Length: 558
Image 1 (tube, rainbow, N blue to C red):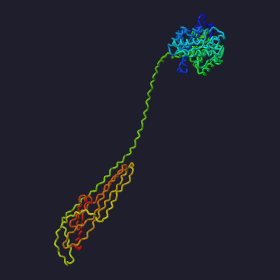
Image 2: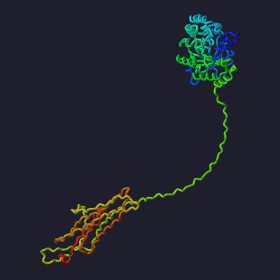
Image 3: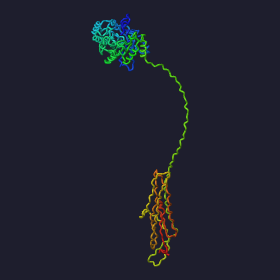
Image 4: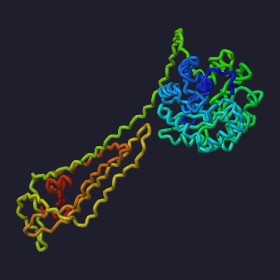
């Protein structure tokens, strides 16, 4: 902590305290409660009162528009009136805090009046014991009520800061146990104020100093944040020593993690080693790595980087690290027209495709077989023109032949026989037409042979035995002709759809009907009429009787 000699002697304790505002920051939600990727809240001490509030936007502009979210100041510790918050500059900070919801107001609060009067240890021990017994509770109750009235009930209170050192009357080393009891009493008193949302930050000095700061830790139930003030000074020769030294930066982070508390850096900056950009770079990197709830740099000489012009190199590092990255102006890319190189048109040679003739397989023409209907001849009944003499058969008793009278020729009426089942005459066997097996046509389709149905010739009627005429010379009865087999009409052969139909062979000509016997012959034929339908079936038929009246026949009457 800078020595009191650097502060103006004519100012009040509150003014001296305001000189340490560079590290101030308002308490925000814990790191784990903030949205992922949100920026770490930062601020800088610029002045304890209204000038400090007025300088915040100028610092933001210097940092390229960086948002300053933390306002940090100190209450004067010269009297209990200042500790109770009866100072006018609290109104200015309260108004600044209320302008934006995400801003934080951090207030350092002394635990004893005459805080920088270099009170000896025995007297400090007496004051601590008095505080632990509740003698000063009313002062802190009034402070709590004042902050709630101003509209900043969520103020982060850095109570009894740097308690492990030797500077302040509220130091811990003279009586650590009563000091912790006194801390607890103050916190419980302020938490009893209606409407309060205070957070209490336990912020020792880095290193051992007068006492190890963990020996002053009052307990997790009365601590919300574990902070640390860290300037570029001993113990330690460089930043690595500041990390590894007892009660150093590493110990601070590990202790807070063990107790489940967020960390903070209310005060940090240059001191005793002049312009040290390496320290600034390493400290900002440490903050980025461990993500404290907030951090503030003490920005006045010799600690600062903006208001103090003695540290230009450190100021450049600080500014480059915290200036938000912004996209540069969009420079339009000049449109360079791409030259259009015409592609030469190379004619594609047309190779004629040889025409391969498709072989034409001739479809065989299969004629439909014409089955001729055999003509059925109509029997012609001849009318005899010459009378047929009736033969006279002599009786055996006649010794001489008596000339018989010349018989009148009687024309026998043609007899139309009733269809009678013929007497056992074997039916002619009609051969079935031979149908050739289907043959798949080849390029040359053979003409299949259809056998011509054989029509059997009618058997000749048996010659009648000449009847012996009675004296009355009866007319001869016509002999029933033998049944003539009807011609067999071959059934048409229907070829398969795949097999070509056979081409019919012309039928053999039917035998010409036998002409009637010549007149005065020995054979007498009587045509037969079986009706129209039967005549078409059996053809022209006749019954013939052969009469032999020759001299050698024994029937010659003359």
